[in-house]
Length: 174
Image 1: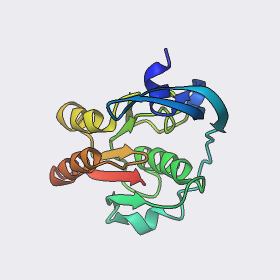
Image 2: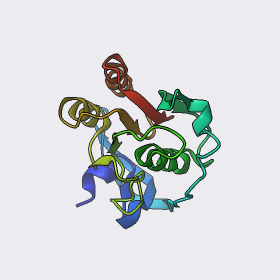
Image 3: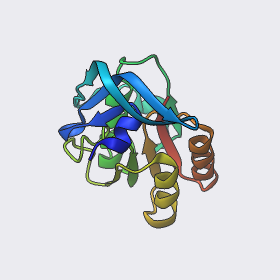
Image 4: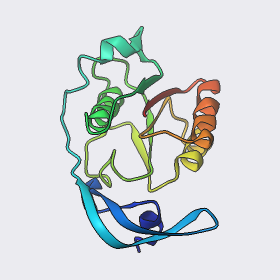
């Protein structure tokens, strides 16, 4: 059941707990097929820190509307935790106008598999690849804000560019 995720170097447990894998990588044609003979695991426990985004909201809003924002920092300094609370606040209208948010939660960390409070106006595309989810959100969920975590590749940047060109605000981490 976890083979697709494990080929990407991780698997996700209940409530968004992510387990990173290290070991012998088996690849074929430049594509990772699996990891075997594990040498170590990195267990990341997501948590909810309600209100941690409060001080940031005035900096990323204009006339009450949230502006597109990219949160950048080294690993394990709370980007995802901050983004999660931003979604909750924007969806609830705390410190800004309430907005309909679509969360593209590829690794089930932002929502914790629907475990965390993302507010009343948040739709979640769980376990959905970012590129597909960003496109699906624009075409079928009418978001005012699209949210995703850990952007990286050119295909994801292209999808974010498409969202920005459509007038939707984007909240993301890198």
